[in-house]
Image (cartoon, rainbow over all chains, first blue to last red; front, side):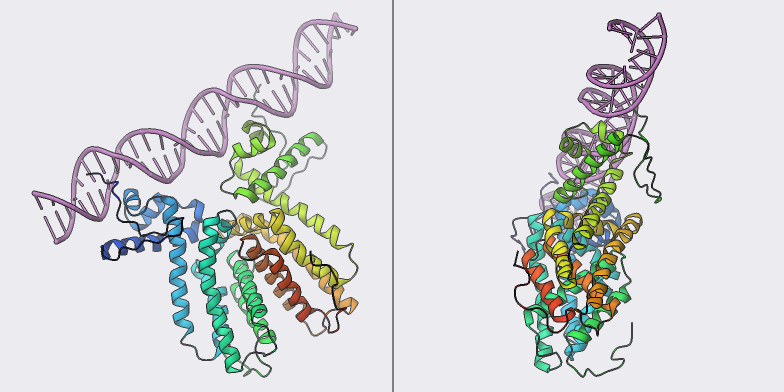
Length: 228
Length: 228
DNA sequence: TCGTATTGACTGGACAGTCAGTCGATTCGA
DNA sequence: TCGAATCGACTGACTGTCCAGTCAATACGA
């Protein structure tokens, strides 16, 4: 038996196509997910380039052969793991945000998710790794663009909701506000992740900005949300 | 003759001390600078982890032995090159900014330098590499903190000048404004570098923000500076 | 029993770092 | 003034290490 016969490809390949044979093994998909879960945490902790196949195998409690059995190569595991990381958090974010009624609270939550929680969980570190790669690799740039645009849409919807609810300033331009907010959050998240400021300071700065520049004049003042 | 006898150490070592024997060879210092100059450009183009000693040697038109003759190891070259890159640009920035009288123009120039020119020259890519490293390596984090604080001071001085000149809004808090501006610029610079938006769009967004939120009410309107 | 999943020893390539030796310049001694 | 001795910069072949990827053998599950 030639063990190099590979299970059907389910990873997004560099050409952007995505093959997902749903008829085959749940087991297999589960195993693959387990590997990706383990791998993105390794990337967060050690960095993309310092993550060895051996590390992944050890963290999964398996052998290097198994990793190669499920993925065509190391690069494929690492890239798929970064993507998996964002797919996961994207879904979680949207789910959580949708439970919050008030657009101001929801926007504050957006800040907390990106600037505090993602920095804490290591997802922020994975973003940073991804961006550093995107500078150099066009394929990563494309994947990143797609994933980022999902996040962008999430934030855009919160802004529109705020205007609909009449709790955001009406003299703001949507594109300007969205662009500024996203850049501000990216900058703060990056600094929090890279240890250039505390997560709490980053959060407070962003919330203060929202209150000054986005929330409509008489905000329901005082302690809307206990300082985490 | 044992060629492994090393020229006196002039690189900042990880313990933070900096030894600079000024009495010895100009030649030597020049050569070392040449290597660093070449190296940071390689880092910008290929990334920290994809830069081989062989690449550096080839780009210098020399042999790998020579690189090892001047530096204790590959890591030392790469780290010193990142630092060199920022030392250089820091000096250049300050020199250029100090020639601009009007604080508003000077602040716009700050934006253009960080968001357009550094992204274009590759220095932005080096920043991004550095930040990705800072997430993982405490020593890099320290070096980064020191270098970033110099940049921060530069921007802070521009803000103070604006208030002194009476051309910036007086209802702003210095720390808030500085922190927001820096995060915004970092975010935009990162996105421009990672190819998530054009440099021109990043520049315009930042300048628009300045005009809305920082510059005092009646700014000398219309075409202060031709769109690059 | 047959096919699938898993193992881990092995291979080959890449690359950092070493070191014996070359070469041109400079100093020194007669 | 000239040859020999010395020196420091530089070279590039070589070595050892690390690691991704392979594959024959094996365990497992239906």
